Length: 371
Ligand SMILES: [Fe+2]
Image (cartoon, rainbow, N blue to C red; front, side, top):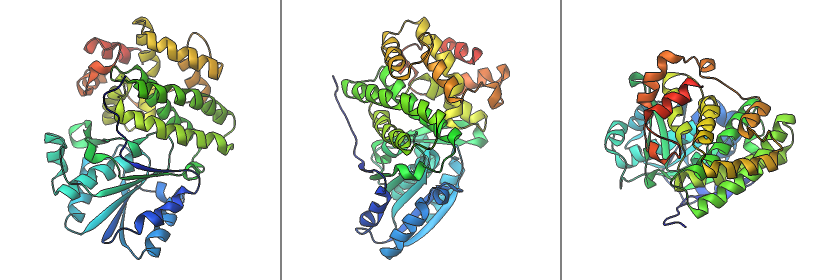
């Protein structure tokens, strides 16, 4: 069954839920720090709505929009140092996983007064944090509901995570309309990330009956929605489904875990400038073949469902899904080749035993060789 299930974030979901921000802000005084990537907050329309809400509550705010894709430890360090002692009472992150993950780390750094370097070295446990409101502008990462903050340190070729209950955002405002202006390629790639969260949290050795129910429901909804979006990007109902599925799969991230593709992607992300989804999709077909080879029963349960709801190739429904979405990538597309394999294997860390087909480093080499 299950021993623990945790979702402490207060969720506001639906078109126009962005208008809830003014109500949430009414209980705050002090100053607000907005964290974003260069343009996502403005293009999505979220920034102007948040600004309106802040002005209506007469709250002073600062706007830091320098967060990059694969957010770097140095940005978290410099923003945290700049705002420590400045009476920040709320952090608002607007964007995809990068902005929200940076927001989580900055919330703990400013709240606890500790450096990001110490938190990475010693872990997060019992630290004071600042309230964090996460506003996703993509549908896929689920970061708004998870307790992980994935960061990179380019100077050390390191990518890894901070994890802890202190990193859960206090509020998540999930307004599907903020994703409507995204181009098709980004919609499908980020949507595929949500699919992988449902898929991997079902296969992980840390699944539970509750996360299984969520995974299966997400897969039944998201596969047809992704396929429909690949045909026609303009049906908003499908984008709403993606946002809803991303949210549900995000709950699973905090209560089960992902598998090898996510662990390997952290390594890929630290050696290339690829996005999270591109890294995932580059290793997915090879990981799928390891699952088939290991005859993982749960994999066959999932593929029979995917086949039923998506009408995909019975012999390789995930490979067919990737192809129909037009998102296929290889490691060489991401600028990596066999000379990077040793380093990629070294950089693949975390609880690898949670993957159902992990059988030592050779499993990773095998996946890389085929990718
Ligand atoms: Fe992911």
